[in-house]
Amino acid sequence: MQFQENYSLKSYNTFRIGAQARYFTSFSSVDQLQEALEQAATLATARPPLVLGGGSNILLTGDVDGVVLHNGIKGIELLRQDDEFFYVRAGGGEVWHQLVLHCIGQGYAGVENMSLIPGCVGASPIQNIGAYGVELKDVFHELQAWHIHDKELHSFSLADCGFGYRESVFKGKYKGQYIITGVTLKLRRTPVFHTSYGAIEHELQRMGVQELSIRAISDAVIHIRQSKLPDPEVTGNAGSFFKNPSIPLEQYEQLKAQHPSMPAYANADGSMKLAAGWLIEQCGWKGFRRGDAGCHPHQALVLVNYGNATGKEIYDLSQEIIASVLLKFGVALEREVNMI
Image (cartoon, rainbow, N blue to C red; front, top):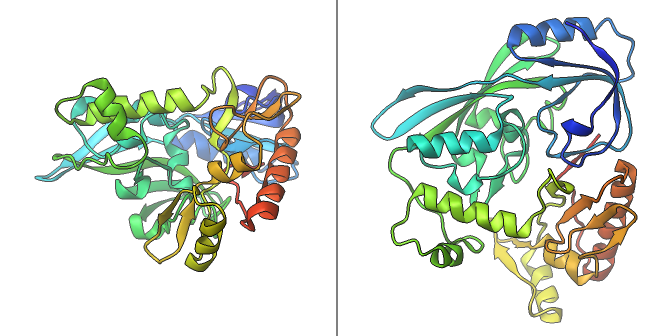
């Protein structure tokens, strides 16, 4: 395989940061991936290979002094079906939203609430992506991943992945060890509709939907996301930059007494999940802009690149936001986006 040197990554990250990779190539099969890794091992670099799909959940804070591999493994196929479920496998390089649209078109239910989430299929388990009350773990069956050092393809079940809120073993103990080549979803024949989260019910009413369907929910989610979130093709961003923090009930009650309008949701363990966007907005950051780095005027949870911001400028802004929320509320925000 041929590596390109000093290659711009601007079109491979949704923040549109103009960082460069010292070496870059793409792969479209497991065999090509193995070949690329073998060649990468012969190159003198300062770090292990970095794999990018759509680059929708990363912030490049500088040039990558190493090898960047672009996951281009495509393909969507129905592996099997039974009386309740369809088992659908997609290549790691497939665009997530295109997979969602394909499933809706075939009548496979379960991913409709996750419409329009940017990025590729291979990144979805790493982050345990989710939106509007549904997470990947709710529809996940298994995945295949290439172990960089063992040079073998391994399978991971739902239990193996250790899914949590925007977490998995691939962000923890296995970070940097595996490259996800394919994901299999377990989707329902009979839909279970999730409409109570966010503004879905209101949007369905606005759309005049008389009979619920997975397509109607998908359309509602798309409309909501497009109205609230910037299009990465127009304004560089990675969606929600911070996780919604969870705090003990006692701390929540103290904060609620001071801030009666503060929204929160109860977790199964008795803690309370706060809305990070609300906390950030209360600290005055919504709509803030310094140079080309800013906080989106319609959704404070989204940091944006208006054109030529550097990754460091956006990172520095996130540091200031974290510090101000901690000072005002005593709540520590955690980034959802991965720093590279």
